[in-house]
Every structure is written in C-alpha cells, then in structure tokens.
Length: 146
Image 1 (cartoon, rainbow, N blue to C red):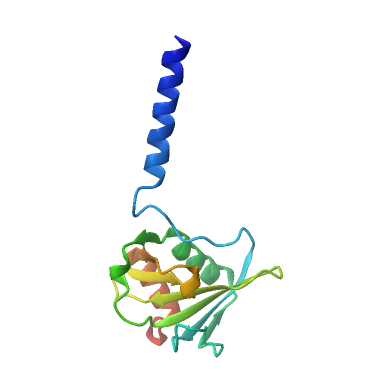
Image 2 (tube, rainbow, N blue to C red):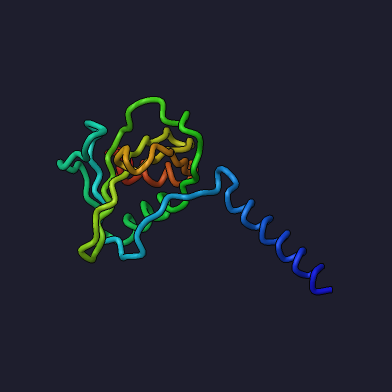
C-alpha cells in the first residue's frame, strides 16, 4: 500500500511540475516591493534605457494599471518582437531597489501589447498582455487618451 501511495505521489508531482512549465503561462516578474513610479520614454536603443521621460506616473491608479499589465503578461515565442519597441518603461520602487527596465510594443486599441525585459542579458523572451490592458495603457500614454 505504501508503495502504491508513493508511486501515485511521484506521478502527481511530475504532473504538477510539467504543468508549471507549460508555454504561455510564465509571466513577467517584478520585485516584491512597492512601486512608486512608472516612467515612460520613447525607445531609442536596445543598449540602454532612454533617460528622458515623456511621462511619469506616480498616482496609485496609474501605477497599479501598469503593474497589473506587466504581471499579467504571458511569455510567448520571440516572433512577437518583429520591430523596435515604441517605449522604454522604467519601474521605480519606493525603496532603494534597482529599477526594472522594460521595453513596450504598445498595441492598437483592442489589440494585445508586447513587453520584454529592457536588456538583452536579461533574456530575449517576450511577454504578451491582453487587449484590456493595452486599452488602459493607451489611455494613460497617448495624448488623446488623457
């Protein structure tokens, strides 16, 4: 009986580990720190982040909207990254933590958007976010949305 129980436990563990690795379910990560500000800059180069922000969001609703979009973005094959991104997104934490650098391909209204980590040495994976999050980001970023 113990042997059968042990085999079943190993089988269930293998199943759960296998499900955890399913493509499309890995999400972007942020630090477990309070996000104080989101800075949006025009994309210029892959080698560094543009330090001249177009927009800076410090109000809680806007910060939460970007934080939710980033954390909801699901990993996809690299073919989603066909052109240069539209924006550099810098996530600034309340504590003296490192800044999270993210590239953003902002989708059209009703379409998905794409994120990737800001520097090649962090990996070249892309993460896709839903049309709902795209529409909210467009409202915040684009002049006609404000």
